[in-house]
Length: 378
Image (cartoon, rainbow, N blue to C red; front, side, top):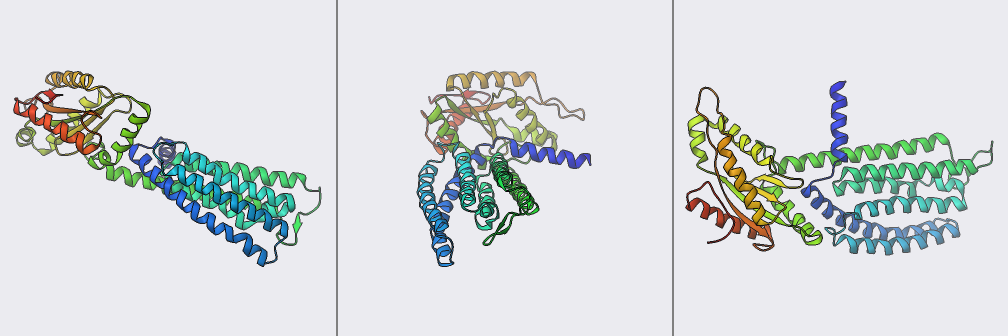
């Protein structure tokens, strides 16, 4: 029981946590996909009033449906235009999610004005709640799924409560076209909305875990090269929009093969984690340490290149005071590293250019004797 509760807490914590750069980038692409799907569905919605007219629907319902279909198509094009610049609008998924749910509720309200039972018994319109919740899975953000689900539950519950509150006491809510409005049926619909929200949340959680596994190094738990290539463009965009500094440091452990040869690969793995722990101590909020190879790391620091050099050089000097202890009576091993720095955008405007500049300076550090950090070309 305790284990199950802990897993549920972990699930809730992950869903409520802010996605990392990769998930946000994937979510931005998902928002664009949702916008395209919305535009396609909106075109299909145009046919629904015509089908209803052929089927003998009331003229008022056909007119309302046609007017809303035109409005929906116009809004779909606006959302699509905004989604094409998805990296700039972090609020867009919440705005479109609110729009999808509220528009569904608005259509049900308009139907209820003509026929109260139609407002709460129209299964076709009600299904758009489920569609809106399902589409949140494409944004890869558990917070959005939970928000949209809660919004659908609240709005539909208020609509149902209002319809029953305004009904004549003791009289059954009955419609020739939509049947009997029963409280039990409406409760079932609310449960179905909740079930769709939970199912979609589980899908989002699973997607987050898969992306995390593909973007993390198994030994250290650090982001890996895949994360670096996918997450950096969003970091660049943030710097361009909000200002600030970003420096990339490429670090390589000096003669690490010697440690593996002397103490074994298992101890070598512990030495890697020892170094990672030391670097993590100097990182500030939103700064990252990435493992891109066996003994190669990238550090992303939000400060100018001069400040980055000072911080990493202090770390380099402090490594001598905290040697790695292999155990089993073996001598302590001092871990040293060489580093090359590159500043965005001065040394490059993409990941490849920054890594190229940093690697060139790393090679200078190695050529000059290792155990040093180089920030400029010589």
